[in-house]
Every structure is written in C-alpha cells, then in structure tokens.
Image (cartoon, rainbow, N blue to C red):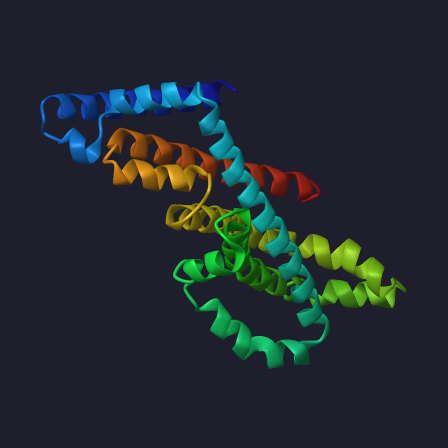
Amino acid sequence: MKGRLQWGALHLVFLAVLLGMAEYAATRRWLDPTFFGQPSGVIAYLWHALATSKFWVDLGWTLAGVASSFLLGSAAAFAVGLAFVRWPNAERFADPYFNALNVMPRIALAPLFILWFGIGLGSKVAVGCSLTFFIVLSATVAGIRGVSQDHVTLCRTLGAGAWTTFLEVTLPGAVPVIFSGLRLGLIYALLGVVGTEIIASEKGLGQTLAYLGSTFDINGVMALLLVLALLGVSIVRFMSWLEKRLLHWQ
C-alpha cells in the first residue's frame, strides 16, 4: 500500500508539473491556445459540463453503444470460433471471405451503416460490432487451439466427456489469449462507436466532439478527449481485473 501511494504521488507531481508548464506556455503564447487549448480552460469546461445533464446523457449514449456492440460482437465471435475449432473444414471454407471482410476499413464504411441503420444507436452498434467480431474471433480460435493437447488427451483417457473436458481444461487454458482479444475488442468497440458518432449521430460524446471542433472550441475538444482517454484506461483496467479474477487458480 505504501508503494502504491508513493507511485500515485509521483504521477500526481508529474501531471501537476506538466499542466503547469502547459498553462505557462499558453499564457506566454508560446503555444497558441486557439490551436492547443489551455489547461485552465479545459478544467473550466469539464467543471461546467459535469454539472449539466447533456454530458451525462451523451456519456450514457456512448457507453450503451460500446457495451451493446462489444457484447454482440464478442458473443457472435465466440460462437463462430467454437464452430471453427469443432469443424476445421468450415473455417477453411469461410477463411477467404472473412479475411476479405476483415481488411475492409469499417470506419470508411460507417456512412453505409448509417444509411442502413439510421443515425440512431443502431449504426454505432453495427460499426463497433464489426470491429470487435474479428478481433475476438481470432483470439478465440488461437486460444482454444493453443491449449496443450496432452491435457486434453489425458482427460479423455481418464473418461471425461467432451463437455467436461471443454469446461474444465480447454476453456480455462484459453482464457488468457481470449481475454487479450476481448480487451482489444472492447477498445475497438469504443473507437468504432465514437468514430461513427463523429460522422453522424443524434447524441453521444463523438457528436459533441464534432460540434466543438466545428466551432473551434479547442478547450472543449481537449476536455472530451481527456474523458475518452480515461474511459479507455478504465476499460483496460476493468478487463485486466476481471482476467485476474478468472485466473486466480493460476
């Protein structure tokens, strides 16, 4: 605990010095606040935004899109990954088509998703889901196939059924690799949702970010970028904590 407090204090001192230097540089006009913003202006914008309902509505809208796209994309990817492991010929047949879909720039296809699903939450979920799916699919297949076959053979020799072997040996052994894909998939779900919101949306942090950029409110842009960065860090921390909880047996 003492080490954590010291480490946290070191980070606070570093951030305070960094913000102080940025504020001084902006005050002396070494950095033009019109293009780079000013720490005091960013803090003032955040203070005002946190007191308004619009910010929380936009935040909830974005988080709902991220959660929906991540859950749908991960569930579909896990199901397809299990099918590919169970029937390798199906993977061999679908591989060229999946590769072709995977290399398509989904953000560039966002206008098409908006045309199909509208400017509501559906288009954001579609883009985020398409980004999450292929990442989690690759991690699922690699994780399950990376499990030691000696352990699987031993379980079968001892009379364990296929379902028992999967739940007790294969799945726990594949969790580290699968969670690497889930962690990255969740980040890409956030990127897909916010990116689509910037293009066209009814609500959301991305839509507000696009408006602030068009009105040259750089302090507001920097403030929302800070919020999105904190969301990304929180997502990674949560997934790492969840992985440790699931792998406590190691």
